[in-house]
Length: 181
Length: 186
Ligand code: HEM
Ligand code: HEM
Image (cartoon, rainbow over all chains, first blue to last red; front, side, top):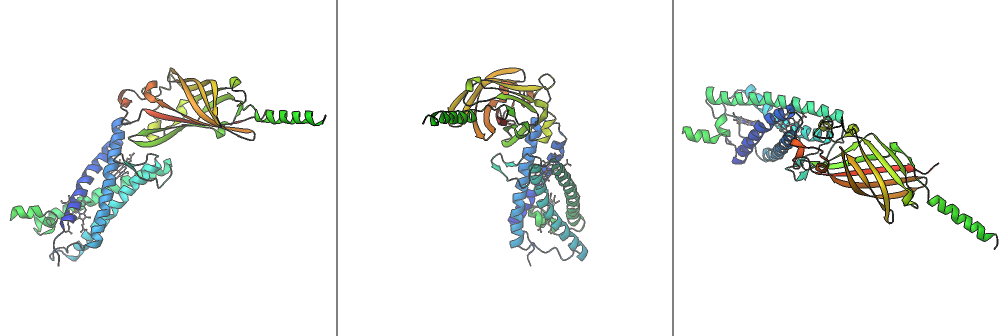
């Protein structure tokens, strides 16, 4: 039975986590700014980070299809296993839906995405103000759902580490284990 | 023979006058004034919903042709809905003091084929600048279709100053495009 995440899986997990912890506050901050060059710049950077998350999501999906994630420690009860899997699946779903709604919103608002200022993503939708506003709301709601799930996800990881003192967190953070050894 | 010559003459006259029609009834609903620019290297396009054109264009009598276009700046659609509310601002078009922009063509030149150019004065945000606008003219029955474009640098007209002067965010080059349809019906 495999009990360890591969280096690739760990790297992708933390890279995506780091980018989400930047894209999320950036999204909140930029949308409240008054119209200014700074706002336009931050929108572009937010989109670039978001598209990067999307590309890493695809890499993660490929990893997930070709690798079986390690089984959770035996000590974890059945409902908690199911909950963990459900949350992981929802997180993956959001890592797909949030960037896609962002991309579609950009097209509907008439400001296509120029990834890193170099590659223009195709517009899958025509310009449509009402649809743009609907997608903006959707993007925002999905983000708050992500926030709630990530808080649960972190709380569960910490509970396993601090209260149950099992391997859950150290499997995703092997460097923690090395220090305590 | 005696009869044929005058009727031929008459025929050529009819053809000539059909060719040399004057296009002066502008079909505003089918005409467009739009522009392309770049924002954070993203190509965007906008347009003006309201404009008035007075024109008399006769490809056979360019020296007698004239055109005047007035654009209602506040009718702008910048292509980015967030930007539409900003254009009235002093830093942008300052529409309170400069509600309209205009182009008055003072001379036309044939460049061969269906290509022409108009020379005249563009007035934008209080600045008046001599410009040359190349265009094509295609005749389709009673209708004449004019398509042209001209490139300007927005900063030459003080459009987007202050914090907006940085051309890395909003590019300096703006390409103005026009598509006018005018009828030659009297
Ligand atoms: C997983 C990646 C992403 C996260 C975590 C994220 C997060 C957020 C958040 C938290 C907001 C603020 C929502 C609000 O004000 O309620 C936001 C807004 C926005 N996001 Fe994203 N986003 C992501 C990806 C993208 C992508 C890929 C694009 C476009 C290609 C994008 C385009 C936008 C835009 C345009 C807004 C501003 C909406 C407005 O005008 O208020 N986002 N994002
Ligand atoms: C936005 C941030 C995050 C996202 C989107 C995210 C997403 C995910 C996903 C989808 C998995 C399942 C991997 C799989 O088995 O296929 C996972 C696993 C894991 N994550 Fe996160 N995560 C985030 C942040 C964090 C943080 C901050 C922590 C630590 C406090 C953490 C700890 C873990 C642990 C320990 C696992 C392994 C669970 C197991 O062994 O089954 N994650 N994460």
